[in-house]
Image (cartoon, rainbow, N blue to C red):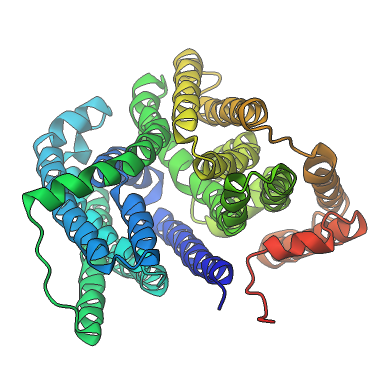
Length: 517
């Protein structure tokens, strides 16, 4: 298999594994929301922004750097150095993860108080051990990814979600109607699933080491001093980018509950971060996977100084991203209420209505975040990672400012969170596109990448609107909603075909394994 094909195949495995994990995560939130309700979901979701922020610090971008350095040294035949890089990173991440776990446990009450709900303090104690498990697991994943074996990472990610789903739902059902205990049980499932992931990866690594008959390799202080700079050079921009992205969610977790003037602020936060964000996350996972599969050609052509091919590769990646993101965005906006009724039928009618408005208001953020995700990867591919860190940081300031102005206004209520998120990603997307155009010379083919897919999406939306207006009774209910979604998808793809959105040469960028010649 050619190296490019191997990379595409590996990216596809990771993308499919990540997408399946996202789907399982979204499916998990549906019954969990139906079991613990909007208030319980609000408590559960309050845990995640601080936890992910601590996790970003605990990993410090090291796994990404390690996989890249191992692959580079393997290419040069420096296999012993590859193993020393892994061992150094493993020890570092285990230590940093332990420190972060202790720190979160120590600050549990302070974090809960800052979010405006003291009931989450116990949850931070329960999830703290996962801050040790996850970085060590990802060090093991990075080792296999660096050796071009993506299967352990992809499979383990899916198994982790299955364990969380099974344990979380079992605990929630067992402890209800005590909502607080049910939420703590769902949080406990996170720690259990991460420990299970670590156990699986450890066994896989030990079997791999025994099979390859790899001897024990030790590293001294001199080795660590030589390896650390190369790891940190790659890791720091990744860590800063992840930290900046996560701050967007932390801002919501602190500002929404504290600034809303309504008495049910936690329930409102639960609707925003539970049903709504679950729906928004699925197309982002899919578009991200497809974009990743197209990016190797961008790196290769950039360093080959082939501007024409670089422009074509960039536009192919953008087009693939928008072709997926636009119909998902339009569909979420047009079908927000039927979709939420279908998935979260146990929620009261007023909460379904609030969630549907939130989903409609934030539907366009799917497009902006998907494009931003691709552009961030492009910046990393062309050696400009710090630019996106600055841009995303400025976008977070925009989000915080809009929240500060709109959240306290009772007539806007929780809808301010959806407005601020959409404006945040719009600002970041516009800025990064301008940056790529000015600094790298990458120009977007507006007609091919945006106008044609948008036309197909608008045709689909028009059909949905007519169906809901004139055939509402037929498309009402579970079966009707599913039929309408299927018909909408078919019309969209027929529109893409009729408008000739893709030419033959661009099909090579699709995430499918090419036949060997």
